[in-house]
Amino acid sequence: MTPPEPRERQLSADLFRVATGTSEPIYRQLIEQMRRLLAGGQIQPGDAMPSVREVATALGVNPMTVSKAYSMLEAEALLTRRRGLGMVVAAQASGSADVEARLELLRPGLERIATEASQLELEPKAVIALLTSILKGK
Picture 1 (cartoon, rainbow, N blue to C red):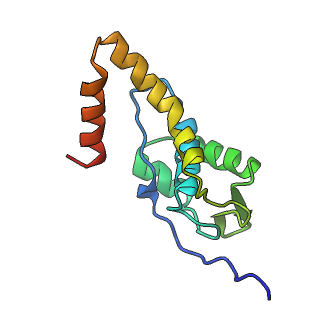
Picture 2: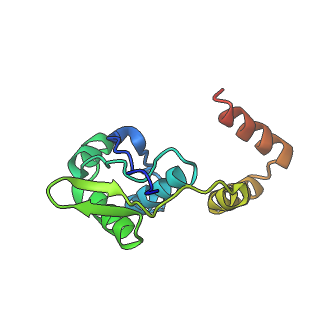
Picture 3: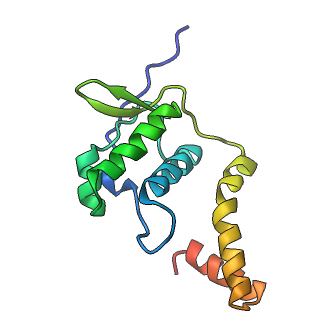
């Protein structure tokens, strides 16, 4: 029995969000978001990526920034280039059902938050309450 062909779904440029006020370069933000979306299962192998121009326009960034992120994701074998058709999520890229692996993707951001909370002399309970509120969308 042969495995089923990967489905192709056209992803939208609103898949990405960037924070311009941080020290993290925008291309790196895009790469990290792709890794998280893939690990979380929101994107799947075979999904067609939005064009560089679409993403750049939607985010208000230089197209070379998006192109750099896509090229680096291709080098990591997370994206595949289809000549004349654009980029797709690579067939060998797969999400992780392992909660621990997905939590590890959050660690760098949470460590930054912990440092900032400590510098602001905030109680852990207050920070956790704020995070809980944000996660619930309130």
